[in-house]
Structure formats: C-alpha cells, structure tokens
Amino acid sequence: MTDRPWPAPAKLNLFLHITGRRPDGYHTLQTLFQFLSVQDELHVNPRDDGVIRLRDPLPGVPPEQDLVVRAARLLQRAAGVRLGADLAVTKRLPMGGGLGGGSSDAATVLVALNFLWRLHWPLPQLAALGAQLGADVPVFVHGHAAWAEGVGEQLIPMAPETPWYVVLVPACHVSTAAVFGDPELTRDSPLTTISAFRSGGGRNDCEAVVRRRYPAVARALDVLAEVGDSRLTGTGACVFAPFPRQEEAARALTHCRAAGVSGFVARGINRSPLLDRLQSEQRAGCSG
Image (cartoon, rainbow, N blue to C red; front, side):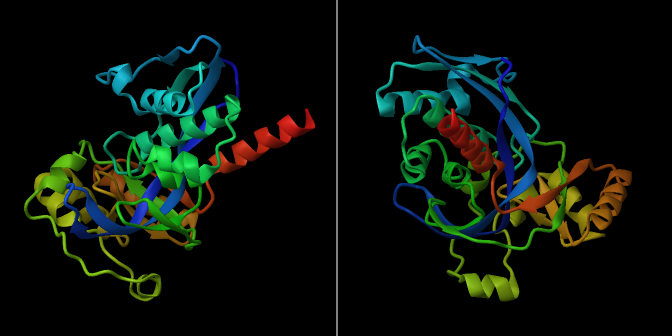
C-alpha cells in the first residue's frame, strides 16, 4: 500500500456532564469536543471483489470486531455496494485512553470509502450511519470542534481557544462500560449552556469514579495538577491540561515525566485534518 494515508485525529472532551439515563440504558450528556494535532493514519485501498481485509490486526482484537472493519462493512451493506477495501492502520493513539482513537479510525474509514467508492453520501448521512458504531463517531465524520448533547449525536459547531495541551497516558486501560455502569456515577447533572460554560467552565462527571477505580489515573491527575489545570478526557485513562504556549507545555511535560508519568504535547485544533484531506482529493478528482 503506497497511497497517502488518511488522518484520524485524537479528540479531547473539554468537559463532560452526565445529565440523565434513557430507558434504553444510554446516558445523555453534554460535552465539548476538540481535536488534537496527533493522529492515527489509515491506508484505504478499494477492491473490486467485495472483500474487506485488515492488514496487521491489533493484538487481541479479532478483525471482525475492529471498528475499522465494522465501519467498512456497515457502509458496504447500507450502500448496497459490491466493492471492498484493503485497510491498514498506523496506531499512535492509545486504546482505552479517552482520546477517541477507535471512533476516529472508524470515521476516517467511512469518509474515505464514501469518496473512493463514489457513493456521494452527504456528511450528515454518513455521520448518522457512524452513530451505530459509537457515540463519538459523528463528530469525527463532521470534522469540526463541537458542543454535543443527547448521547453525543446532537452537534453544534464551536471554535474554542486552541491552546497547547499536555496529555498524560497512564499505564492502564479504562473500561467505558464499567465507568458508565458504576452505581456511584453522577447521572443527574443539570443542563448547562454554552455561555455558562464559557464563563465558568465545566467538569468531568466520570472523574470521581475513574479516580476510585484506577489509581494510575488518579496519580496522573495529581501530578499534572502540580503544574496545570488537570482534567480527565472522556472516561479516561488520559488526562490533560491546557497551556498558552508550547514551551510552557513542554516544561510541564518534563515535570510529569520526572514524576514517572509519560505523555505528549499537542495543539488543540478546531478543524479536523480529515476534512482537508477529503477536500484535496475532491479537488484532484475535479481537476483530473
């Protein structure tokens, strides 16, 4: 596979309020998604024989359970196409870290195959399909930082500040199902507004549960709090803090590494590089 890879960026939940629980068991929430300048990369090559093949599957994850394979097969069925695809993922985002790596990979497959198979589905239709794979998939398909409500599918584009972030990666894998199933999880946060968030910020309702269940995450939050405003993203395990300048973020990361917690520095971005890649492909197709 020598084609140019398609980007699948990470995301942060700048806050996360759990506002209720529906009869079907899904939790309703409010959150603000922002992308990061770090990403997985996917090679996506169409096939004529209808086969969906994943090269180098993740250890311990059967291909049929991998979100990129599931995304390709879901679109294949929904569109009724006989084409297939060879898929390969270069993983840079940690699994179980709350950075949305699996959902972002799935969204990139949907966007790429929609173009390569010449389906011409509009992004809202593609995002609605992606919601069947996970609540975070639609925001990656749309490709804009967004305020989200419902179960994460009701999106309002936003343009929050784009600081530099220190993101710490504790050496553990957090189970989203376990966190949302914990009886002590806050499920009745009152609804807030965008203006209230801008003036007073928000919190992550999952943090108390994750702290109790995962000492490594609690340790990371405490270490980062020594140099910044540490927060949990999603259900974790990753934690983050914003800094106005890259140099400040780099110094904070050095402090955290000295304390034995690994991580990285990335810039917050409000437009996904996936949209830029798609538009470049579309322009190339028009000019060709």
